[in-house]
Amino acid sequence: MCFGKDAYTLTVGTLGGYVSTYDIRYSVASSMFRHYLNWPVLAVQTYSRNFGKYSGLAALVSTGGP
Image (cartoon, rainbow, N blue to C red; front, side, top):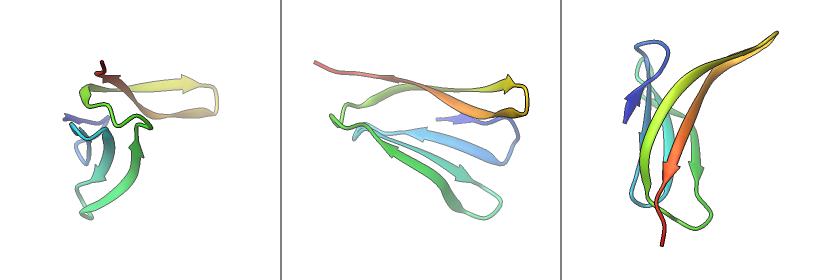
């Protein structure tokens, strides 16, 4: 689990292979992703990317596996 660029975004990884981003202000999940092999998410780190007019917050995810 880690906080995003601002204090209102929380990114969570689960042992079931899900990565969810929550907006704490409104108590809603803004996005959800499931690893197709259901591998556990061992680490999550958010970073800000700036590519000209395309900038935003992304998540870097480390998964576990056999």
